[in-house]
Amino acid sequence: MIQFANQPGVWLLLLFPALFALAAASRLWARRRASRWGGPPMLSATAMAPSLEWDMVRSACLWLALGLSMAALARPQWGEVVENVNRLSLDVVVLLDTSRSMLVKDTPPDRIERAKMEIRSFLSDDQGDRVGLVAAAGVPVMLSPLTEDHGAIAMLLDVCDENLIPAQGTDLGKGIAEALKLFPPESDRDRVILLFSDGEDEGKDTLAAARTAAALNVKLFCLGTGTSTGGLVPGPGGKAMNDPETGAPAVSSLDEAKLKQIAAISDGRYWPLATTGDVAPKIREEMGRLKRMEYASRSQARRQDHYALFLGPALLMLIMGWAIPARKKTEAEERAAAKAPKARKEAKR
Image (cartoon, rainbow, N blue to C red; front, side, top):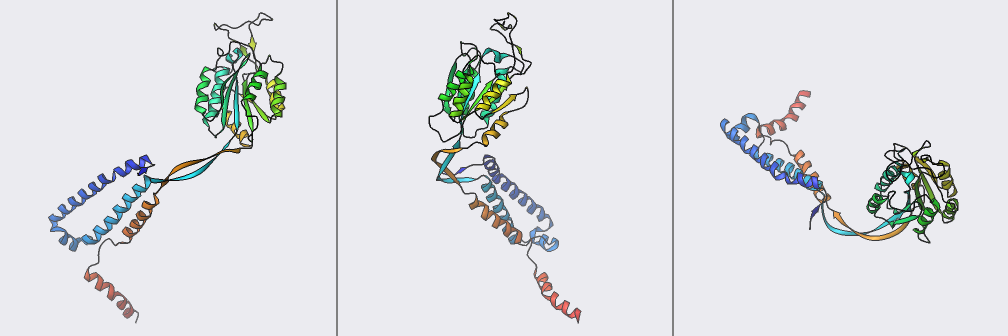
């Protein structure tokens, strides 16, 4: 069954009959006008119009060239060819801090939404990587194992908020440990954890978890969400929470030193998430330097293009139409052309 891969080209091809009909009507109208001057024979003799035979052949070549070109532009396809497709990949686990301090609005619209924007930007550039998702607050929650379905990961981000995990606080060490569980025990691919957090951490084993990741050849790419100035932490009712130690309104600020330390232990990288700009290209650039091993080879059927079968004859018809003279020489012109060389020779004498 013939299919066309270029839909705009199909619409253009459907216009061809209308264009041909319009040209035929125009030619018929011209012949009727010529009848006022004695018909085509008289017009040909007086105005040196093209002869009907040559004009018909020339027009047929040009119209065939146009029709075949339109058919080639529509990219006709039939038949299938089976080819092996090799996939290259990294394993990436997104670790998102969902503690209440991520609701601070020092990075508009707030820290957690800014992080989600960056994660979606990263997911939109599909490089064939397998991606997992873990949310972390007082305890971690695995939301998705490693998958190539980046759309599903993006949808799961909608449930990642301060209400997802009842146990509040932040324990990044437990989050890293949970993320490490998603990686297969043995892998020939580089593995990365993308940690989105403001760096405020109440856990005691975070640096130990980073060392475990380094021992497993897992790199931690940390993205600091927030500013050094910080802001008030909103409570359940929208009002600022109070610091249990001082009783004053709780203020949260970005702890860059902690995130840089985590990244350095695992030979990872650190980037701050500014209020504007996109860090995802920098992440992709850094990941591009990592080793991407082939992890799957599968057979895939692909339909075959046959536009060349139309484009070649179209070019031939175009050349023929260009080579055919606009009109056939009259007998008088042919005799004059034959006498021209003799006249030039006599003139030279």
